[in-house]
Length: 501
Image 1 (cartoon, rainbow, N blue to C red):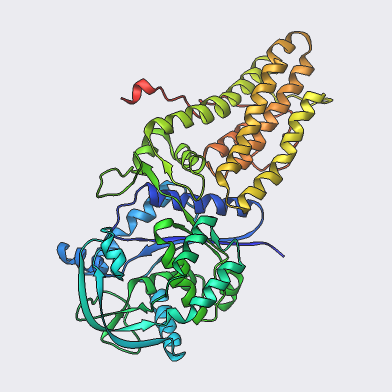
Image 2 (cartoon, one colour; image 1 turned 120 degrees about the vertical axis):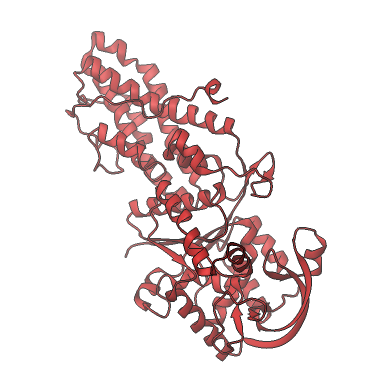
C-alpha cells in the first residue's frame, strides 16, 4: 500500500498583498509535495483563500464593490504568483465557493444537533483588527488593534468540554504539534481554563459570511468557517472515498496561528468524531533586522522582485535552505547573494561547467565510460548511494534545509575529489582514467539534480537535459556514457555585489 501525504498551507487572507511569508509557506508545501510524489507517495497539496469577515466587508465598501466582487478581483494575485513560483498545488479553494459553504453549514448543523453549540448573551473585549474576542491579558499586551467592548447575543461552541481530551491527545502523540517547543507552548496554554468559542456574528453588525443554518439572523465567525476548508476541499460530506483516502493530513502554518489550528480546529474535529491532523507544523517568521516582515512596517520583501532579478529557482533554493523549519530566519539581500554565489554559482554551477568543459576538451563532448573504479571513486559512489535514504528520512521529518545540505555535501565532496584527481592532468597521460573521474563527477551532478528537482524544478531539468538523463532515477550509476553534451549558457551566473547598488 502506498504512503499518503496530504499537505495544506493556511488559506491566505484575500485582502493581503502576497509577500515572502506567503511565498515561503507555499513553496515549502510544494517542495515537500514534490519530494513525496517522487517517492511514490499518494500526494495531495491544497492551498487557497479566506474571503469572509468584517475586514473584507469594510474594504469592499470603501471601494464601492460588493464583497464577492472585491474578492474576485483580488484572488488572482495569489493564483498568479503561485504559477510564477512554480507551485504544483492540486487544488485551490476559496471560502466563497458553494462546495465550501455547503460543508460549513452542514457541520454547523451537525455540531448544533450534537448539543455542542448554544446561545448566550456575552460581553467581552473585541479586536476588530483580529476579528475575535480577546482576553483581558491579551488586551493589556498592546498587540491587538481596534479594541472595544461589545455586548451581544451569540452562538458558542463548547470548546471547553474537549480541553482534557485534547491535553491527553497532545501528550500521547509527540509528533502531532511540531516543533516540540510549540507543543509545550500549547500545553501551557491548555493548563489554564479554556473558554468556549464564539462562532457567530449578528448580521446587524456583519453580513459578509456564511449564514448559520439554524438561525438566519447570524453569520459564521470567520475562523470557524476558514478552518473547515481543510476537509471541505477533499470531499468531506461530498466524496467520502476521496476524503477517507486523504484525511488526516499535515498543516503547515506560521507560528502566529498555532492556537487556532491546535485548539479551535482540533476541538471542532473532536465534536465531528473525525481524526485529528497527522501533524500541525508551525514554522517561524522571516525577519528583517529582527522584525517580523509586515506591511505596516514597510519591510515586506516582494517575491516577484527577487524572481525578476535572479530567477524563481534561486529564490526557492534560498528560502528552503536558509530557514530551519520551526525557527525564525533573517532575510537580507546580502544573505541571498552570499548563499546564491556559494551554493549555486560556485559549488553546483561551477562543477557543471568544469565537467562539461573537460568532457568537451578531452573526450569529444561525449560522456566517457566509467571503467574500473578506484578506492577514491568508490568513496564518492558510496556517498551517492547513501544520499537517497538520507534525504528521504530528512524529508519525512520536515528537515528540508538539512536534506538540501546533504545534497550539497555530495557536490562539495566531488569538487574536492576533482581537485585531488585532476582529470585535466590525467588526460595527458591516461585518457581513460581521466574519463573515469569525469564519469563519477558527472554522475554525482546528475544524482544531485534529481534530488534538488523538488526545490529547483526548472534549473535541475535543464541539467538533466544537458546530461541526457531527463528520465533517470535516484539510484547511483544511472548516467549513460556515450551521450553527447550540448553547449549551454551558465545556469547560475555569479552575482557581482558591486552591481547590486
